[in-house]
Length: 264
Ligand SMILES: CC(C)(COP(=O)(O)OP(=O)(O)OC[C@H]1O[C@@H](n2cnc3c(N)ncnc32)[C@H](O)[C@@H]1OP(=O)(O)O)[C@@H](O)C(=O)NCCC(=O)NCCS
Image (cartoon, rainbow, N blue to C red; front, top):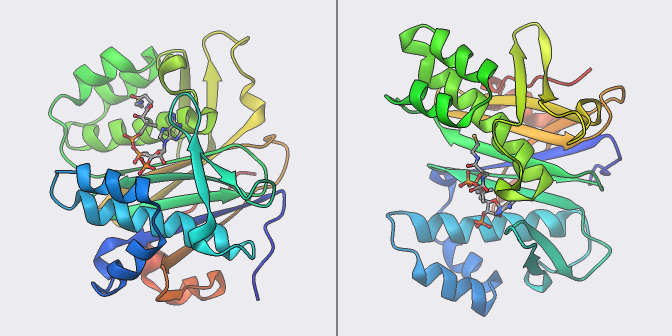
């Protein structure tokens, strides 16, 4: 039975491309609109087409999971900054946001709260300090600079994914200046946001979570939900059309390696 998506719930659907059986790719193609097929053909980077197709399949099957809509029926539009939303059928779809990096694709879903998600494949960033100085707020840049050399890339990617998740939840792209907001990331308290200009947004309206998949991927989730309210995050691994992993079974899977930090 489908667990309902309540106001305090966030489902984070995780697709590991290495788990997809090749024959499923043909079935995913049958879900795609002509526009999506044309867009897929334009992609040139290695693995780009497969990831694009799987991302479409993930979004369509996940949205259908909560509704009675056939995965082929969804029609998507995008706001002026590129954030996708459901154009048709209107009124029944939950909110969602997508992210992909390396072999990982994520789809975060809420009932009606604004949501943003970001995943980055862990990698060495020799210019982490310089990039942080250029793009991050001063306290974040200092945290990267002051981290031990071998941890700088990871610290950078933590801030990066949090910042990106917030920007994506807002859906207004670079209209949000990256140095105009900053994160406090401490081990013993939930992550929180602050704003250089308090008129730009209210930190108490947002909750965040951090997730890691082993040492390979760093992820962050942003949800516009008052900090005083509970937030229940379910991480759900899926291979569209193959099977859906029920959250109750997650403890028996490798997803134990995830570290999920629930907001208070
Ligand atoms: C457009 C943008 C959101 C994409 O982010 P990215 O990290 O390159 O890519 P991700 O895999 O996380 O997300 C891509 C998905 O986000 C969604 N998306 C696109 N534009 C979006 C927007 N303005 N807001 C929210 N989601 C958006 C799309 O579904 C896209 O996937 P798709 O094209 O396959 O459908 C990003 O380039 C952006 O505007 N970033 C903000 C500015 C920035 O440089 N931030 C760095 C943080 S320090």
